Image (cartoon, one colour):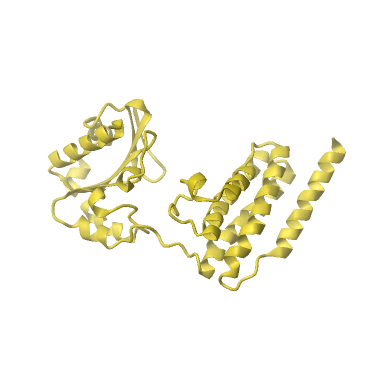
Length: 275
């Protein structure tokens, strides 16, 4: 048994013993049945308002196992670090927020694997009303607008920043382009199982050629590597975009691609001349 599974069993016990806890669910890898020894444990906890007001998240988590450190992340959830560097992510919410679950894009796992506590039966029907997996716009013009267009925007920005010599800022912009490139790869190959986190399982779920090209589009924040990664990202984007756009009768921005390609070639020429 993984240590995380022991922690999950303890979370179940703590939830059951907390009379101010109305409902609780587990999400993420363990709920989906995809976890390994490196996976987090992740929960939403819905308390009565009075009980929630009196909770100290670290103390609540310490009843599960010793906590070496705790923090509130950028999404407002409490992250506890348990022995062995196991991350536990806990959303301490109130019963009023159960209705908000209905706005999730998907639940990500079977309902019976997610539910820990549901004292009034309010949480289960909300979860059952969600699709288990998100439905990506594979055959919709929305795919181009939401995933291809931002790729072009970030890639051109990264080019300008690198040309200016702002290598770290260019590297950051390239990261945004890479994430959209991952979505584009999943759209083109109709491999959308892990849509919300497109890098997850990419090595297993995308073709070997695409994975190799995605790796080539990464770099350190150095001038030479940035130019190489920009070119690799452009080359892969040029391959993927038409596959996605042709399905809905749209054209890829070939003129933009050609102009960016020429600009990168000019930078390569200038670098070789200087060398």
